[in-house]
Image 1 (cartoon, rainbow, N blue to C red):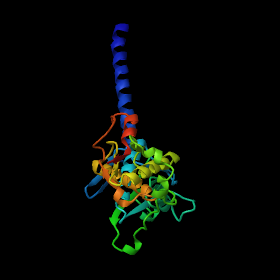
Image 2 (cartoon, rainbow, N blue to C red):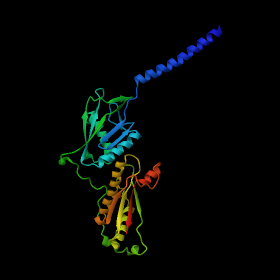
Image 3 (tube, one colour):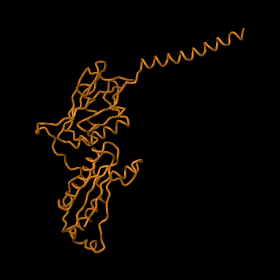
Image 4 (cartoon, rainbow, N blue to C red):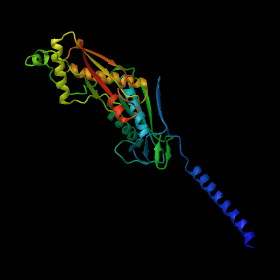
Amino acid sequence: MNKILKPGVSLLLVLWIFGGSYWIADHFSTVNPVPDVGFHFKHQDFKVKSDDNFYFAKDAAHLSIPEQCQHVLEQSSIYFMTQPDHEITLTGMFSSAETYSGSYPDLGIARAESLKKKYVDLGIPPKQIKTESKPNADVILHNDRVYNAVSIKFEKVLDRSVLIKKEKPIFVKQKKLSQKKLVQGQTDKLNPPYKVRKLNLYFPQSTYKLKIVPELKEYFEEVLVYLAKNPKAKVWVIGHTDDKGDRKVNIRLSKYRARAVRDFMFEHGFKKNQIQIDYKGPDEPIATNDTEEGRTKNRRVEVRVVD
């Protein structure tokens, strides 16, 4: 009897395992499918994409940004900043099934304003961004997360009266230094074989804001003293980036980094004919781009005095 029952019990056990596995897979893949929520942005020859995307909680405007999507937002922000004659329109969306009780007129505006704040934090002038709302939109709701809830439009502004004003310098304007006064009392620095040391200024990822420290002002005072006694000398200011992201965007970013340093020098007594700028993007690294330490060294502006 046992010999007859054993094969039958074994067969039922196998069918139960496979049948249960099939039911679980079929049930959950049907009830809870994973949507295609990737982030894609394209404008002319510039494009970025990510398999992941930012999202909002259901009925809320709190913005969550996965690490992969954070990088493409940074890249797009650089591209936006290099075209100040264009305007960004963020259209916030929400479904009819969502409710909202915040301070903005509706959930769509609240979501658009949340993404606007992120872009402003990345350096985009607030006046370059406008927000609007689209109710009853076809957003993607998955596990209480709302995807595709803000669309991005980037277009040239034809009416010059609404173009953004030129931003103030990224540093506090100070009184220009007199080259004549600098030379007085510092002639000991000019005795041979005195040479101005080289300087590298480093920048955080995807930014061109210059960090002002007392040592920076002291360095440029040295350079001014040298130039006063060596009028044929030039200061080369060369911008660089790491190799992350679109190459064309990095070229622009390196240009803006060099300009930020040059503008700081103008505000501190340098003359236009004393400075030459150049920008290399990711093409001339001084360290590996395979590590964060190396990429930090490559995100720089080189300042060199050339006789």
